[in-house]
Length: 421
Image 1 (cartoon, rainbow, N blue to C red):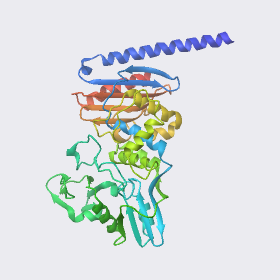
Image 2 (cartoon, rainbow, N blue to C red; image 1 turned 135 degrees about the vertical axis):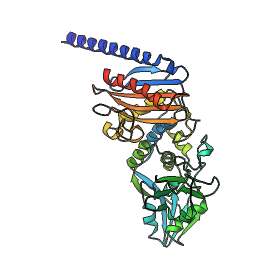
Image 3 (cartoon, helix red, strand yellow; image 1 turned 90 degrees about the vertical axis):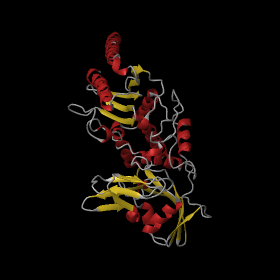
Image 4 (cartoon, helix red, strand yellow; image 1 turned 120 degrees about the vertical axis):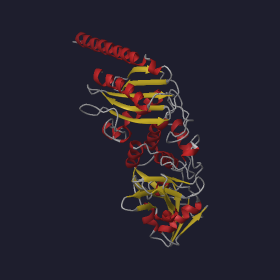
């Protein structure tokens, strides 16, 4: 009996090894073309169940990750935040509530529309806000200055409101949210935007697309926005004799993470790290959250990343394909697949992968893309036709081809894995 088991085991291992060798050879052939001559490519593919590396090509080299950085942000949020988002800390003294910021991005956000802070504040005659407890700058290091009025680059702040953007719709008429900015929006022949140094906005009269334009966040604006919804009740404090210690919670954290990953929302990613830091101290610092997670839950990474922001907007970030696979594997081992995969865009179906990597007859890619000029990366999970789960990271930097041409080459390799392993 033992002999028979050993024979079966030997045969299984032999044929599996042959299959891996064949796959590696086929992938090597796909990469050995002139298309890849003048770009930097890294690939790492890992079979979770077999605990086996299927393919490694430049996987220990550092790449500019773009929004693949959000995978580390997701991991941080999952590890450090409670089931519901800490909206703020507060203390009550008679008819006054003192609210201290935690960085929650969902308050009156165009998508989430959370009103936890507002509902509680309405119950009191006076509202004191503490929102100077953040050490982060409004922009991450290495962000492009010309993106100041682009939808994907809202400022980071301690107490975000409305997603830190002005939201403009033009259906039967032009509508502005928050309404505070209604008289600060100029209707023009140009597309849309904002003056660089002031909250003066413009919007094209023929533009029909819903548009988000980042605000310039300041103490005076925060106070004006609060007093716009709670007239003559709100004031800002730099410090308080009362120590806000009771936590009020807003939305389930999974809802926040899913939105951040699906549409690759940079603002939510940055604020998730700020939120995570609120569980460590009253001083909000995304660097503190990053350093904590690297020192503790990720202290065993083979290559320590250069990790400077939550979103991946910065070109200062440097990560290896191996690091992404290691973090993705940690999540896969800890979280049931059904729950974990819901955070990731699905090839051919949702989010940033809606138009690429579709399966036939069912989806097989659950992954996070990362795009900057001349860079496209994809890291996540691939389900083979035989039902195996492969964790992968495929990174492309510094190419001169179109993104579409790069994705076509990637898809050839993904389909090879799906169909033949």
